[in-house]
Structure formats: structure tokens, C-alpha cells
Length: 425
Image 1: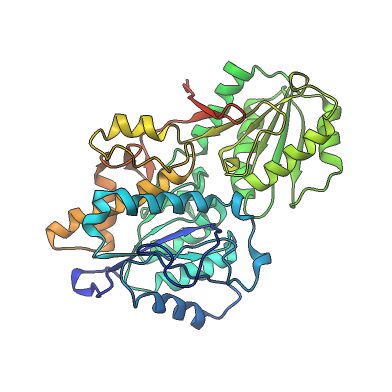
Image 2: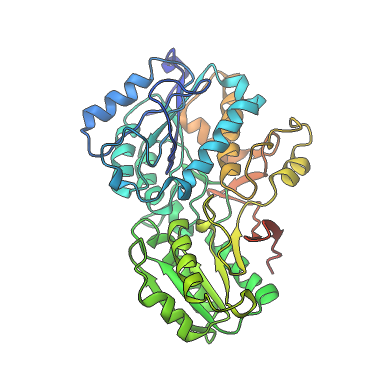
């Protein structure tokens, strides 16, 4: 069902941000224009709908979808600790846009932002998406924050013609369902085909590795993401991979994996997966290589899913491939008229950037449609397909078949805390 201007309620259209997020919050409004409500997928459908409807009583809400919300009655369902939940970054970027973006400020009286806890779990995400898709006030979705949950829910949003901005899920097959393109989905970062090319370029140009040990995160939320990258790396690195291992559960048992890596004596360990498992692996490898100087240890290359706040130097020369580079450099190049210090609290090379940009893009899209007097989900999708988004964003966006045509990947050196662009041949 499309949404016309006649359907606009007092509270405005709903803009839903789905992410894996955890933060210490209160049940009442704790920041300007923000209210946080915890949602646990163990409760009934009626209770979920009541939580959504309750939030409509106030204007200008953000209800964060998050991990480890304090009122969750089943915290064991959350897949990642707060410091490893990429939804934290996404939401911080959304908050920054609400605080600093003139585009958001021009539409904030019409749009309400609500976010709901999906716990980083596909079943939970599906349950939420089914309920959200039935609400005719929903104009757009930002999320979800892992490839598994996003791929599972996109067909539901497509049936309801709800446009979805994908801030961090990078699996190339994500935008397709049963062989058909999901025309309602728009991915902000470059996908994993570009990431694989960036990883290979980094290995060739900088790491110059000859013996590689490949580790894939096969935990439920990460398997779709890691399998695609892993298979592509195997095809391209034939003859260089001396060993491989699938990690099924977290926390890692301190048994076979560190010893297996040590016995193969690689000069590079590649880990494809998410931050919690990466941190655990690095800690265990640090203990296994305790008697070795950094120069005698293998280098470590991590995929972008490992870029979380908690990831720190663990005694290895560690690199991450990541789709977002310098927010400051990007905004100076792309939007010189933007306020001088909107990024003062933004964490560089993080998913705060697409979180921020997703909200700005939707605000600009809505603003354009409001001038025409016709606002609908279909019109939102058409405008997202047709426009180039530059001003007010940290990066540049032009969507073709749901993918941003402006594609770039960066390398990030964990101990040096520096990024560098990767020239992909």
C-alpha cells in the first residue's frame, strides 16, 4: 500500500532504523527528540504492536533497534556485546544527522524516527519486519545491521513497497530474491565483490603474502557474509592458502584453532567475519605467539565486519578492509558548504558514516516529494533511483540497481589508527 499525503498523521511518517545496537538507556526521553524502547522477540505480536503504537503518541521519536537494551527479558538472544554491535555506529551517525543536518531539520516536523531491537537475530528481524510492513505509516527503513537479517527481511519490505537503505550489509546477493532484483533496496557501501578485490590488492601490494591461513566466521549471523568472501578468496588465492578453519560458535574454545594456525606457520592470517569473533581470535593468537616479537608473527587481515569499537591492537600487524575512509576528507571534497564541525564526535572509518548519510538521503528525498504534493513509498523509490546525493553527505551516492556507483575501499591499520585508499585494478 502506498502512503499519500492524506495519510500523514499528526506524528508524521515513520522512518525506521533497524540495527544491532546496545547502550545504557532509560525508558523516558533521555536526549532531545529521542525515546528508546526495548523490544524482545519473546513477547507476543500484540505486545510488539503496542510498543510501536505507544511511541506514536509523541512527535519526533527515535526508538533504537538495539542489542543489550536494559529492559530485554532475554539478553541471551543478543548475538554481540555492545562494543561489537555495528548498530551502535549506525545509530550514532543517525543522531549526528539529527543534530547537525539542515536537511533533517527542514523535515523533522513531518518525519518520526523509530528504531526497534532485532537482537542481531534473523528470526527476530523477520518477526519485526512482518509487523512493520503492515503499518501504512512506515515510509522507509534503514537497516538491518547484518547481511543475514537484511536478506531475510528485504522481500517482506518489497511486498509492501517500503524503500530500504542498507547501511552496512555487503553480501552481493543481498539485493536479489529468487533471482529477481529487489527494486526497493539501496545499498550505501560498496559490496563484497569490491571488498574481495580490495583484499587481494592489499595482499599483493602491501602484505606480499606467500602462505595464508583463512578463517571464516560460520556463526549464524555471519555465515552468509563470510562464505561469499571466503569462496572468492579461495578461488583467487589458490596455491597460497596453507590452511583454513570454520568457526561455528563464540566464544572460541581455546583449543584447535590457534595451534593449527601456529603449526602451519603462515605469514598472513585472514579472518572473515564479525568483530566479537575477531577479537577473541586475536587474543588467543596473542597468547599462542607470546614468545614471538611482532616482527616474527604473521600479519592479520580482517574483513569490514570486524570494524567495531572494541577491536584493538593485539600484538599483530593488523589490517582491515573497509568501505568508509576519512569522513573529514570526504565531506570537504563532496560538501564544502556543510557546517565546519559536524564530524567532531564522529568516529573515523566507522559505520557512523552510512548511518548519518542514510538519514540525510531520506530527508532530501522526502523534501523533494513534499514540493510536488505527492508523497508515497513508490515515489520515494523512484526518487532514490533517479537522484545523485552529494550535498550534506560524507560520501557521494548514485544508485543503479540498488548499488552505489561510487565505489571505494580503504585499508585501515589498527595499531597506527590510519586509513589509506586501495587502488583497485
